[in-house]
Image 1 (cartoon, rainbow, N blue to C red):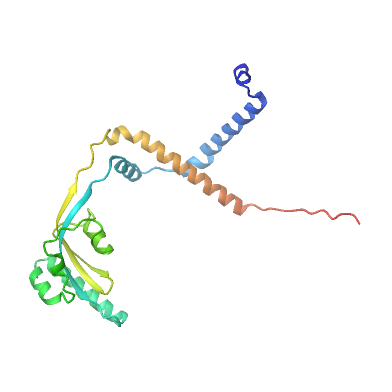
Image 2 (cartoon, rainbow, N blue to C red; image 1 turned 30 degrees about the vertical axis):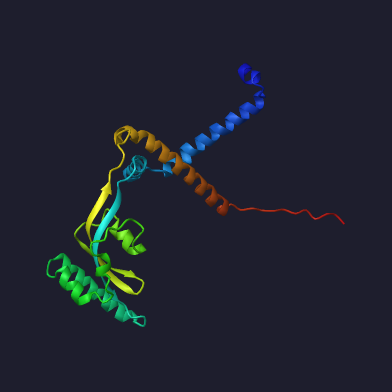
Length: 214
C-alpha cells in the first residue's frame, strides 16, 4: 500500500482496479476459456506465415480455349463443361496428346499465346493465374475446365520455378508454445466479444417511466 500511495495512486482506486482485473480473469478462465481450442493446423499456419511461405516466381504452361456461345443455354453450358472435363481426363490418361487436343479443340487460338512464354504472377487472367501459381497444382497435369470470360480453358503447368523461403530462426517445436499462446489470446478475445454480443441480445431491458403527478 505504501508503494502504491508513494506513486501517487489512491489505495481504494487501486484495489478496485485490481479487483476488476481479477474478476475479468476469473470470468475468462471459467466461462470463456473452455470455449476456445487451438488446433495443430492453426499453429502450423501461423508458423509458416512467420517463416515465410515458398513462392512461385514464374511458370510455363500449355493451354487451349473452347469458345462458349454468348446465347448458350444452361444445358448447353453443362454439356460443354462435361466434354471439356472428359478432354482433361484424356490428356492426363495419355489417351490424347496436347498437339491433337489443340488442333481439334483450341477454337479460341490461345495455345500460341502460351507457347514457350514465361509467365510471372499477375500476368495471366485471374482464374488461370490462381491455378498456375498454386503450389497444389501438379506440374505436368491438365486442369480445368476453367471458365474465363466466354471460354472454357484447359491449362497445364509444364514448369514452375519456386523461390526458397528464408531459413527459420527457430524450429516449429521451439516456436510452438509462443504461437499457441498468441493464437489462444486472440481467439479468447474473439470468444469474449461474441459472448457479450449474445448476452446483450438475450438480455431483457425494462424501462420504467414514472407518471408525474398532475
